[in-house]
Length: 177
Image (cartoon, rainbow, N blue to C red; front, side, top):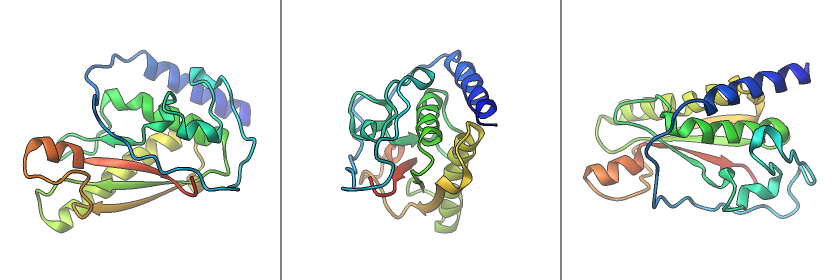
């Protein structure tokens, strides 16, 4: 059964890697949440899994690893994961599948436009979109929790598109790391 899951993940990764990627998030700063001393999963590693290199716990804090990027951005009024962010979600899916004791919280956020209730719902839809993509790629449902903050925790203060685009996001927060 595990071989079948790995094969399914590899097929999805292959399909996603064939998609073109444009744009990027140059200059985006991602918070380093650090590692908890003595946290579980010591020694867990999956070097070389699906071309992502070292997927050990230490890779979470390696700036050269895709796992150090933990923010997925969204278009206005959308919960669709952008094409350029799918490889990032796939890297996190591979990491989580290779480290079944690791848990991640998906925190959904919106910009300030819209009613509070609507923004809470949209933040939840964004977190659920990332959750579904992780689970399709082999992550156990018990490893993922979601929460929506709506507009309550902006990453950037401001009332223009520049600020709003940074606030429409899902943050992947690894519990205990």
